[in-house]
Length: 304
Ligand SMILES: CC(C)(COP(=O)(O)OP(=O)(O)OC[C@H]1O[C@@H](n2cnc3c(N)ncnc32)[C@H](O)[C@@H]1OP(=O)(O)O)[C@@H](O)C(=O)NCCC(=O)NCCS
Image (cartoon, rainbow, N blue to C red; front, side, top):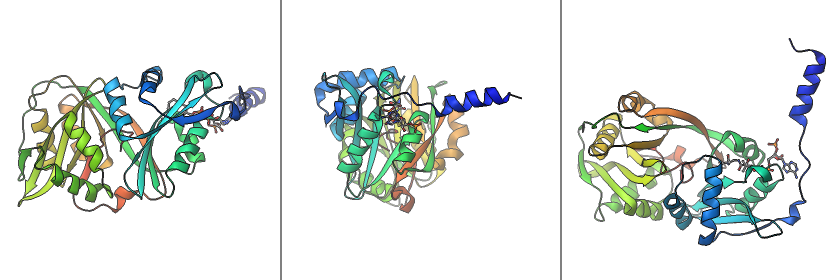
């Protein structure tokens, strides 16, 4: 049992907040530019996130970025948000380098985004470091996301389901944009068009109607498989196994709770859970009012 003195010391440590380095007015927020990306990439590398420059370019090209500068013009934080229409946006790539944390910069970046996004409901995936800040901004946990990844254990056997599976191309891109909007609760047309151009994909049809799709692109430590949408687990497994059939190397998924049933099968392919994170929302969680197919895997934690 700790002594009373030790308890007081622990309580003091928990309550202690370092004095701010400078007042908040010493920092200015401005729009992110493409020339800021090398610094932003350094920030994500410092916190051991796997983003490569291509990932930053995709997130930047689809998003609205802000950076925060100190009085000398050095970048001391970054944030982006992605606009999915009048009702919804996601927020991500929020980083303040370690030596600048605890000075209200994270809050200043969040305040910037909350004013830019207006009435939209907001979604983000919180790290342990960010959760408290987001709670203070009015976000609450809406779902769990499971980060699953690894080196493929061997050649993936292509499985079938009662759905017919076709390659994703410019002719059926509109089909996936439609089913994605129904499942996600709002349209992600621009994002899905950009992701389709970066990699390859498959679409599942039943009775001539699209019921699912999967996209694979180069990202992070290897390739990311997402989004994956399907109307049942067998179709999700068929899409995933067929898209991975000729692949080797490192694969990452950010799975939703819906994908719990296929996780043991993914593990048999060499893809194990390495993290569980909170998906937080301020306002309405639009995917909860979805219809049709189910989301099994995100595009990325930032994009949703
Ligand atoms: C999460 C992160 C962006 C927060 O940035 P930050 O600039 O440290 O955030 P803030 O300073 O605004 O707030 C953090 C804490 O400092 C406190 N704080 C705010 N203004 C302050 C001030 N002027 N003086 C002292 N403390 C202050 C806040 O109350 C908060 O404390 P609490 O968590 O105990 O309540 C930052 O920790 C980070 O980049 N972490 C690594 C990457 C990451 O995990 N990003 C989140 C992705 S979802």
